[in-house]
Length: 384
Ligand code: NDP
Image (cartoon, rainbow, N blue to C red; front, side, top):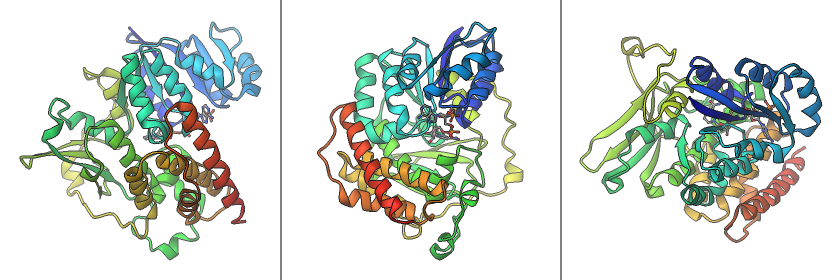
């Protein structure tokens, strides 16, 4: 019996994780579930799983949560600090599935507790990768990648012989606008941008997939997680999302991980690792698939890719600025405050306008994140 905490339990990744652990109640006991403000979703999950703790980041939601959980043994707390306390509550296994850099402090708290920390939440790794990886080493925490591409690489990568890896190939679906001209993208609506052809995901990552910033963030994430030089990490468009990424070795062998485009597959891999567990997913039907397509990404139509690659090359504070500006721009786009093409433009302008020294601590990263958010917010308001 392993104890499990899910940070971001009410989101897309959180509910997929809950689905798996609720199918194996004899194997997992829920320590804590957290959300931002979805009281109904959190309370329902806490009741179903008998969670010890249910925690909302938005402190104004504590009383409604308490009311929704009255008559249960689940304890209730609220506020950003309470989410960090839940993260360090000593679970054996913690799913980090908060969206955005808001997950950074909870991820650090889970690492400090020595838990196995499963990273779906990629933004903290982009903004504070070095700090996170160093903290995991220091505290003896195990980091496992749940992002499907990084989980695929993890499954294919011979960690004992990193020098034998020639390159990593990250696959990308290309998102809903893969074949669109830039001019057509100008009038994209939030509804169109979140309608991903292959994956069902939260709004922010869906927009990131549409701009391809998601692949840019993943490029940085891959460089943080695997000992491979950034120029050896390539991106290829593979519209069927069946191959989740590949590792090529010096002898020319390419190992790929394939599977259905359902996040329960990589999450199950992390839940059972180093063992395997059954999931309800049907086997891939190769005859029905018939073909797998590949094409080079187009950085002219999707400039977010080039911005992310440059931020990775430059290092220091650049990835944190890229990420913060992108979070602000995506939120502004979803609120209909800016156009789709403005997202990458705001990221580019924020990167051009702000060049602080490299961060060393989490507090440094958070200060850079806050300043970049302010600048990106001003730039977004200027669009109106
Ligand atoms: P969702 O938007 O569906 O869920 C986000 C979760 O985080 C919710 O539980 C939400 O609570 C909570 N949350 C939001 N803001 C805060 C905050 N300020 N403090 C604490 N909790 C907060 O996102 P996804 O599940 O799609 O994505 C989560 C992370 O996983 C992202 O980093 C994403 O990039 C990554 N990821 C997602 C994939 C997917 O398939 N969805 C695939 C690979 C990676 P509430 O519901 O109350 O708002």
